[in-house]
Amino acid sequence: MSMLIGVDWGSTSARAFAIGPDSAIVDARRADDGVLLRGGDFAARLDALLGDWRERFAAAPILMCGMIGSDRGWVPAPYVAAPAGLDDLAHRLVAVPFARPAWIVPGVSFVAGETAEVMRGEETLIIGLGATHATVCLPGTHAKWADVADGRIVGFRTYMTGELRALLLAQGALATDAVQADCDDAFRAGLDAAREGATRALFQARARRLLGRLAPEHTAAFASGVLIGEEVAREAGRVRGAADGAVALIAGGALAAHYGTALRGTGLTVLEHEPGVMAARGLLAIARRAGLL
Amino acid sequence: MSMLIGVDWGSTSARAFAIGPDSAIVDARRADDGVLLRGGDFAARLDALLGDWRERFAAAPILMCGMIGSDRGWVPAPYVAAPAGLDDLAHRLVAVPFARPAWIVPGVSFVAGETAEVMRGEETLIIGLGATHATVCLPGTHAKWADVADGRIVGFRTYMTGELRALLLAQGALATDAVQADCDDAFRAGLDAAREGATRALFQARARRLLGRLAPEHTAAFASGVLIGEEVAREAGRVRGAADGAVALIAGGALAAHYGTALRGTGLTVLEHEPGVMAARGLLAIARRAGLL
Image (cartoon, rainbow over all chains, first blue to last red; front, side, top):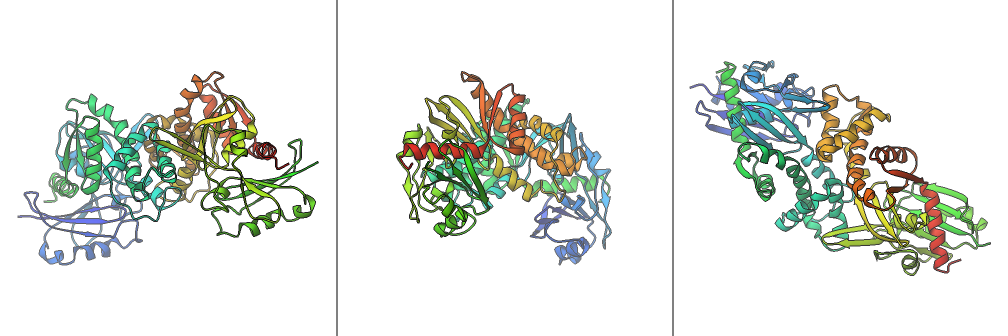
């Protein structure tokens, strides 16, 4: 049985999976060794990430996705223009120099009129979902909403939800020394406030705090409500117009809970999927189609 | 003739005006000595700001507005609840201990349902405008849109336009080493992109750069277009519903030009006013009503 070592190597962290032929994740590990956190020498960094896998899975080829294929990564893997599916990605893998066969999955670009979109890593999770027709929501620093038709990514949109949340909570008028605690009421108040638009609703986190209407420790929950509310409101109409009215949500933990609340609040059906499982399945599918296994 | 020394003391800078009885600004000065930039000892900082004015305008009382009256300022000046006009502000001045009579203008708060709003400093510029009925736009870190009726501030809204622009350009996916140059085309492209909502349109600054559709040095102009476009789109309907369909814009320099472009693009009439003149007039009007002169 041939194994695959899959690596989802993003800006701030790397997640590696030892994947069996039945898609089973035999072993998994994670390192705070994001592409953007340290300079170069990716071969040594990948070798360190493998550790005892070097011998345990000695015959396994390696397939990577994410920012490792960007111009700040190991070897640039040029974007494949949407529509893009399993074949399009599998035929454009980029090889990297390493002690064993190792490849990078390209990102996907999408241009519609003046609007330009790019993704790296999400395309692999979407392939892992294995849907022929779906609207897929992938929360994160740069949240993606992708339309899948006939098994290919035909278009997608990006929201700066995660990055704006992080920037605003770290400094400026919304920052606070209070240790943050999740709070469903504050999150829902943020969802409501989002109707006025995010750039107005975000200031509510400060004004309500100053006037004693929001606890300092619920600032992050409120800001999450505003930003996720804005994103979901923009997408809900599109999803309702689609045949099935359902969203495939690829997210875990608090993000999955928040997006689930916001999506269900607009009357949509939500199907949750674990990001690590989707990454492993996607990498295995692409590796097989490319003939690496 | 009795002079007034007026000080608009905000978070990042202090602007002082020696104001004659006819509202003429006899002299003016500015210091990068914002309320939040250094801790305490405001008496010494005000004394340094006065400099030779100590003798030149020895008899003049001092009236201050802005963040100097916040809980991080000299002496807290509690918010006056809207509706608030000249009388309401003049009757709630807060005295500070100084070598000569010195006072702070309170800020204004506004609560409507769940929505809370606060301002400090803008109320004085609005008084300086001297309008009985108007919609007033005050761009800045936290841009304000105020409704004036019968000479009083009856309601207002805040947009985090300036703060979001600064945070996004300083770090994260939009930051760039390229020296920024203003560009009308890039600004207008941002205005157009804003129709998709700010949290999506902002990412366009990165995606278009990556795909060669936006010059790195025009990132700031594009982001300004997105954020100002979002703000103006939210307010335009309200202004068109008002009797005169005009906006009083209190702004100078590039901000005045950008907001003017965005406002006129929605078919509104724009009347521009210089912030320093508005501050001096407002401080003089409040000082007179309070009997300081």
